[in-house]
Image (cartoon, rainbow, N blue to C red):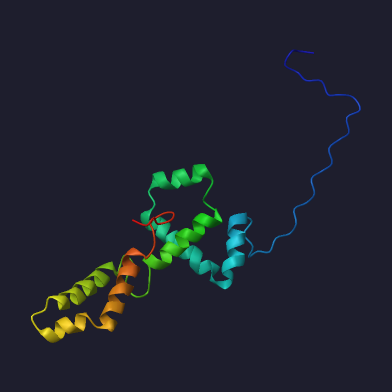
Amino acid sequence: MTDDSVAEPANMPEAEPAPAPAPQDDAADPRPGLEALRDEWGEDYDTHIAAARRLAGDIATPELVAAIDRAGLGDDPHLLRAVARLAQRVYRADGAGPEGTGRARQRLDELHALQHHADPAKRAQYRSQGVQDELERLYTALYGDGPVVGQARAL
């Protein structure tokens, strides 16, 4: 016997073969994070995942992707839920997504121009509830309505 060999102990029971994996539904994703989101989102799952993938493709640098991979967070339901929620805001049908940000900002400029318009009726229109509601909607669509990360502190 050489120094680098290992002797098999006598009377050692043989390992039993591993049980066969349970059959999986073709629609089920074997990754637990995605399974949890599939349950949560139901028939909207594919839409949310597609939006999250689109956003990640649009903004993620190779370094960010590598960091997420190293941390093992690619299928983390908390991260995916947040990215999908962000994607919904970014790609809103109302024109506030990357393709429509210019239109939303243009509309903000039009509404703010009413505030300093020479015509008093236009200035009064700026103060109307409808214009104020539209301004709030546009600002929320473009910039969100909560803290960037974590909890906001009172100033």
